Image 1 (cartoon, one colour):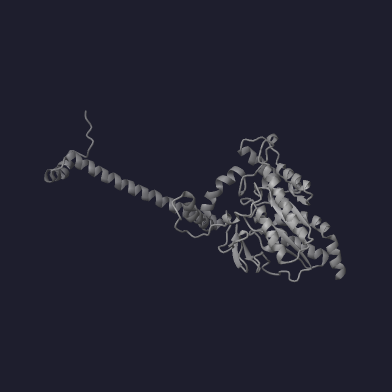
Image 2: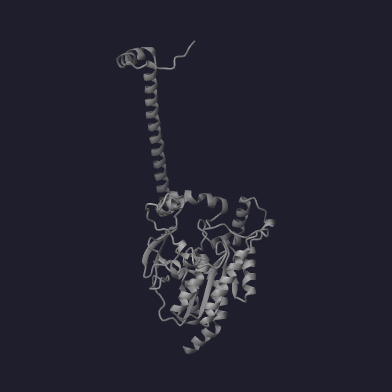
Length: 414
């Protein structure tokens, strides 16, 4: 028995046969066009239904995440950075803005030189001045400036010695050792310091060579969507997709969760770049040689002003936390006996020791801390409020030893 592929015969006779006779078109073609038209309408209706359901679901998720405070993405404040002919980019001077970083409300305030300063109680006419340079771990937009490593350190020294101590926070997110060298030259030319502290984050403060000529290539893209300069994929990304991604990261909790959940689930807290050089078989250790050479140049700059300098190694969370380390290597099918999580510290320590540079390695103290996971953020791998306090405490004793004669002289002056 043959199954007729089209609508019922009476329906065909009453509707399509007169149309076919009148138009002179084949009945089969009319039926085919009708079926395609209905198919298109069905597809459009189903597509609209799916998109509408997806948008509605995302809105519900956004509302629930915000209502229960499940996650709050970091907020990059518009107008935080400006183009800088020497450094590529730096902080906007005389800024005074409010921000919310992972749910914590803070203030971003800078002085006339673009250094981050306290929202309240800024130290004036300091008796002891310390220059602190680093990347986002020192900039620390997640806390108030007085809660950063530099702020806590200055307050502790002030309380202990009854002196006005100011630790200038010259940290800027995304900077590398090449930036630290340029910032050292700029800062030392502006005012006199009693000590310099350069923080080196072992997660990404590794460079292949001394290079201060391409710093302008690293200027953060503004959160403004514009027409691309050309049809090249890199220009399209820079003009459209990257600004759009930055905007969505600030505005949408759901987008931030989707954007980083893969990284977070596979390796723990978000880290800007892969953790380098943990395997003895790696051949990229020469990067720490370049960092050592830059540290030598930085030290020479401080020597010109008869100012001591200390280099501080900041380990990644994967080094300090046993839990994060185990998760990191298991997700990458690595065995613990195949890697050495202290290897970056060892390689950089060798370079600085060979150059007779003073350094503090925080790997062992942070690893031995009773709750290393509390030092770093659960989603974002930057220091928590507790982390800043702990790091400042470990650095304090070394700073006091270096500044011993200065602190005693100032106290006698009192």
